[in-house]
Image 1: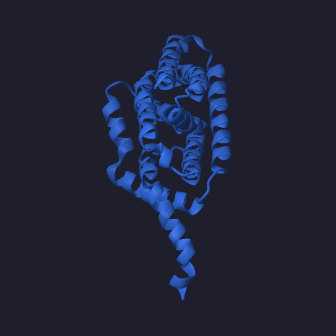
Image 2: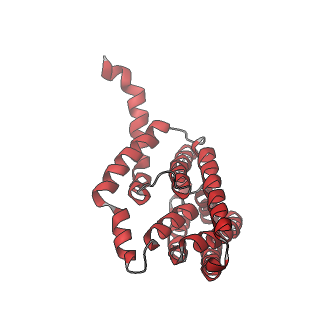
Image 3: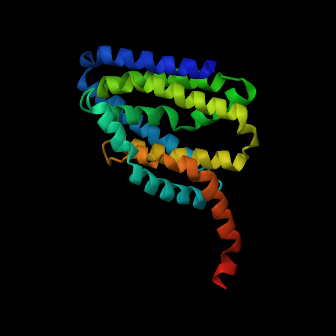
Length: 229
């Protein structure tokens, strides 16, 4: 858990620095940093999408997860609970948590820490997140600071899960989880660039459905000819 603790602290310190310097950073520099973060997020998302082993299963997970998320409307729930903290806080929290937690480094880093006790990847990721959090907080405000405890909870939970059951996961399933995270990062990149806004939290249930939709996709593709006969 050393890697997760370091990562959460790095996000908190970076966000604190960004909030303190926010008014002193020129608007042009903020916009440039935001554009860079958006483009970098798009690039990482594209790379991660290429790792998918069973794209049809990921597609089914997104469809099912989107329907489930729409019914529960997690995004709106978070927006309402954070509205009292100030305008835009909920969006800042959502965007920063997805940026810090939806990447391949989160999954692989927690896996290495949980299975092998090696926090190296999370230590590297935490340093990167420190810089990202500073610029995000300068542009979006204190909602980014709230992401620090959420990062600790999510990455700590993943590390604990890998300690318990992660060794039973196949490489193919991990690849599909990476691809699914990549798709969400693509959506986040478009959001950060101001090109299109998504209710990204409503897609989170897709992560819970993926093992089942992956199995369903394999079965459908294996028996599709018989179903058509």
